[in-house]
Amino acid sequence: MKRVLPIILVSIVVGQWSGNTATNMGVGQKEIGLFTPYRMGLNNGSELIINKFVLMPSIGIKQEQTMFGNWQRARIFRVEYPTMGMKWLQSPLGMKLGEPDMFALISPEFDIPHMISLYGEMIGTTGSPWAGQISLYSGAGFALGGEKLDGRSTIDLPGFYSRFSVYYNGFIIKSGGEYLRQFKEQWSYIVDYDMYIMPGGAGRYSFEQKGLIVWTKSPKLQIHFGYKLIAGEYPFGAQAHLFPALDFIWRSDAKHN
Amino acid sequence: MKYYFKYILSITAGMLLTSCDPLVNQFADIEDAVMYRASNIKNAEAKKSIKVMTWNIRFGVARLDFFGDGCGDRAILGKSEVVKGLEGLAAKINAEDPDIVLLQEVDVQSKKTAYIDQAQWLLDHTDLNYGAYGSMWEAQVILADGLGRVNTGNLTLSKWELKDAERHQLPLRSDQDGLTQYFYLRRNVLKAKVVMPGNSFYAVNTHLTAFATDDTKQKHITGFKDILDGIVAEGKNFVAGGDLNALPPNASKLDYCIEDQCSGESYHTGGESNHKEGAYFAPEITWLSSLYQTYTPAISLSEYGEQEGQHYTHSPFDRLQLDRKLDYLWTNTNWNNGTTHQGATSLSDHIPVTADWMVK
Image 1 (cartoon, rainbow over the protein chains, first blue to last red):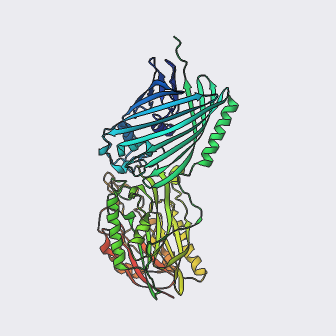
Image 2: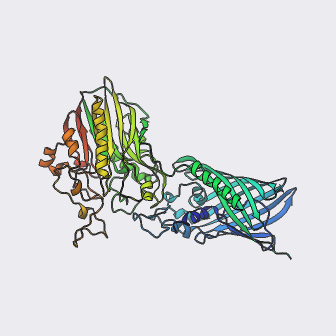
Image 3: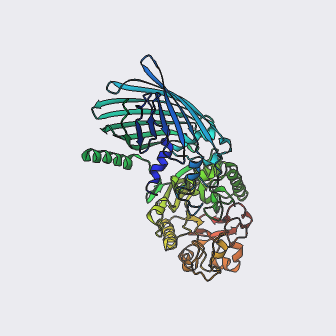
C-alpha cells in the first residue's frame, strides 16, 4: 500500500483536471494514464472523462462546438464529490491521530461535510501537430456544502491547495493554454500553462507551467516526461516548486463505422 | 524500446534528485541562526545585573489538548487560540522584564499554530529588541497526523543586539528507523553573542531530546556542555539554559509512567516492566552531574533538595500540579535570585525559571 500511495495521492489531484485541447477522441476510443483520468469517445461528438480514483468520484463531459474561424471549440462540464477522498486523506492507512497517523494530509480532528463542485469550461484549439497546435481555455467552478468545512483543514501543498480551494472558497476561476508541436514521427513536445484564481482564500492564486516531451511509442502507448513548475500563494505565503513529470498513457483504437 | 525507456527514466530520476526542494531541512553541523529584530527598537542601557529567563513555551498553545506531547486529540490549533496563548506569555515576560530570554518550542511557520511567526510576534509585544532562532524541526510537510508544514525551534531574545549567532546540530535519535528519523526533530544548541555596551557575553539556548530510549540524551548533554566549555576556553562568559528534559541528580522521584499515561495505556499496574518513552529517568539520573560539577546553576542542588516541590518546572497535559524539574539556567560565573515561577502553570506545560546574572 505504501508503494502505490504516492501515485494515488497524485492521481487524486491531477486526475480530473488534465487534457487541454478541444479535439475529441474517436468514437469508442479509450484512454487512461498513470496520472490522468479515464477518457472515452462517445458517438455524439462528446467525450466522457472519469477520475479513476473511486474515492474522489468525478465525471465530466466534453462536447464539440461549432468552429469559430480556424478555431475548433469544445465545452466541458464536470461534477465532483470530494468528501470520501478527503476523509480518506485523514487516515490513508486506517491509523489514529498520534499512532502516528501515517500519510494523513488532513488532521482527523476535522469533520468533512458532504460537498459537491460543478465546473464549466470553454476551450478552443487551432493549428495542427506538425505545424504547431495552440489551445486556449477558460472556466469557472463553484462548490456547494463547503461552508461547513473548517478552514484549517486545507492541504497547503502544490497541486493540492489550488484544486481543493473551491471547497473552501466556494468559487474558482481557471484559465490557461497549451502548445503542442510534433517534430518527429514519434516525438512531440507540449508547453502548458494553467492559472488558478481563488478569490477569498488565504492563498489567492496558483500558476502551473509544464514542459513535456511526448514519445508516441506506438498507437497505443505514449510516454510523457519533463517538468512541472508550480508557483502560488498558500496560507503561509508564496512558494515555487519544480517537479519532474512522468506519465504513461494507454489508448485503444477508435471504432470504424 | 529499452534504450529509450532507460534514457527517459534516467532524466526523470535526475530531475527528481536535483530539482525538488527537500521535504525536510536536515541542517549542517553549524549554521548561522535566523536573526530577528523588533519592529520598534527600545532603548537598552548597559547593566551590572542582567535578568535571564528560560521557558519552554509549547508553541504558544498554553495547556490546550495538543496530541503530540500529551494525550490530546488536536493537531491544528486556531489562530485566536494561539494569539491568546502568546498574549499570556508576553504578559508574563513583560511582568518579569528579563533582559535575555531563552525560549524553546517556538513556532515561526507551522500549520499547527496558524502560521504565526511567534518570534516576531513576541519581539513586537515585549520590551525585547533582537532575536536569534535555530529550528529543530523544519519541513514543508510532515506526512502524518495532518500536521502539514512545520518550523519550530529555539529562540533567544535580547534587549541588546545579538551577533555571531550559530545553530549547532546535536546528534539525531539513534533509536528510530531511517524514515522516522528523516521526518523527526533535529535538536540543536543555539549560541549567540550578546553585545551589551561595554561588555559582551554569550547566550546559549537548547532543548534536548525527551523521548529517546538510548543514550541520545546523554550525547545531547555532552554536546551542550562542549559548547559551554568552548566559550570558557575562549575566556568569555555565558548565560545558558533551556529544557534539558532531564532531572537533577538528587531528584526523589524517577518514574512518571503512571502520571504520564494516556487513556488506553497501562504502565506498572499489572506487573508490566516496560516504561513509557520519556517518563522513566532512573537510568539517566546522573547525566546532568557533569554540568552541576562544572558550572553554576540558578537553582543549586542543595536548594533543590531542600525544597524540591518548589522548583518543579513541568507537568504534562492540562494538569496544573507541577511534578518535575526539566528546565535549567547555567553560567560559568554566578547567579542571584534564582526563581521558579510556579504561578505561571496555565501558560504552558513548562514554567519559566529566572535568575540575575552578575556581569563580570
